[in-house]
Length: 55
Ligand SMILES: [Zn+2]
Image (cartoon, rainbow, N blue to C red; front, side, top):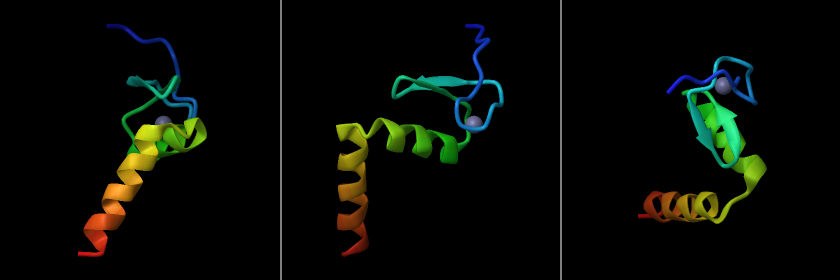
């Protein structure tokens, strides 16, 4: 699949379409896209990571 879109966070060529946003492979961009979207998946993942940290 060819993608002409650019990462909407950093402007590099996009590799993925996540959270209704084109992003590259950079985890920071993915995190930012998710934060902007504010989806329930992000919230869930944050809760899980806090549970793990508190063990
Ligand atoms: Zn990016």
